[in-house]
Each structure stands twice: as C-alpha cells, then as structure tokens.
Length: 254
Image (cartoon, rainbow, N blue to C red):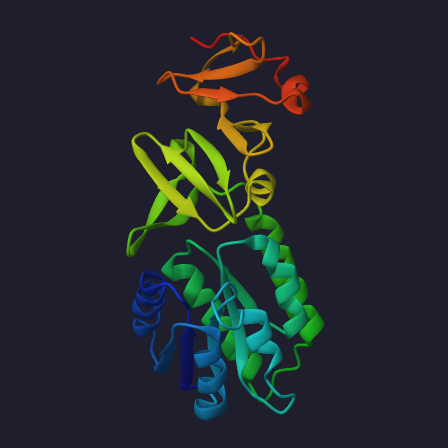
C-alpha cells in the first residue's frame, strides 16, 4: 500500500527527525510539511494525504483543533506527535490512530506507520474502539517517568537528560531547566513537570521551584529563619512553608 504523508510540527528539528525516519520506509511519500496549525489545516484540504503526523502544540491552531477540522468523509488518518503525554487522552477524541511521544525513535515511527496501514486496509474489520484501546495500553506503558526531554537551545532543539537537571523554576508561561551552567527555557508548567517527573528524585519545594534531590547538599535555616535548600554547587533555593513538611525526611547529603 502506497502512503502519502503530511508532516505538521512547528519545530524544524522535529520535522527533520520525522522526515528522516519516514523516508527510510518503503512505499511512503512525504507530500508536504507545515510549521503551524493554519498551514496544516489548509494542506489537509488541498493534499488529502493518507496520514498526517500532527504536532499537538503548534501556533495558530493546535493539533487537536486541526484534527477536528477534518470532515467525517475524510480518509486521512491522524498520528499525533507530542512532548506531553497528558495530551494523549484528549487526542483520542479526534480518532487518532496512534501518537508519538517526543523524543521517539525510528522503530516507534515504523510501528505507527504499520498501524496506519492496518487502519487503511479495505478488508480491515478492526473497530476504532479496539485500536484506541491498544493505543491507551501503550500509552500507560510509556507514562513511566521520562528519561529525556526535547528542549530548545536557541534556534535548535536538543535532548536533555532528565537526571542532569539540577532544579526547575517557573517563569511566566514556561519553566527554566537548570543543568550545570546551562539553562533551557521549556514550554511547560511546574505543575505538569511535577506530574511527569519521578517523585523519588524530584521534589517541589516552592510554588515555583522543583529540585533534583540528588543535587541537594543540605537543608538549613537562612538568616531570616526561613528554610532553604543548598545544592552541591552552593546554589541556595527557598523552601516555602507549604512545602516544608515534604522536606522533613531530608538530612545532610554527603
């Protein structure tokens, strides 16, 4: 079965990675690439691809709204691409056949394409509910705490190992990930970061701060009498009264 695929993602590096993975597959043609939701919606109408790899978090229109613009007569199969697995359940409301959780490997792309081919087989008797049930099961397996994050570094995107993050602080509508001398702005909130990260390693110590416990050297009182956490590099982070009880088990780390 020859597949015509459309890629829609606002990150150039993500489009490049997905393009490279898809170009390695036989009988698959990439008919277009889009960098925002409005362009994606237009391309879907003009190109009528067999499958669209659709990033959920895009400017203009997000991927969920783009998918909802597809008519009931449309044959296009949707595979959502996202860095946030919290979006995955909402994605199934748009009849997604699969989703790719960033960062993903080529084998995961191949598995998604195989699922697309099964969906498009004229003789397929696979019901939508069964397909989505399998995707949900797969999602539950992948909801394990992420080991890597795809983050922006200037004009490019890089993979940041979660274990290398020293602490996280909120800044308006995003967070700053501190890793050694590097600081990465990441489009996520402290709340969603707290939900995704391993609670055995990362602890919220303030409304705007999450700390990697492996980086903590000591917990002590400041000159004002308030509690602070001191990291191994001597960075001092304030501990709010609301989160003080969560630190009662902490002692000096060697």
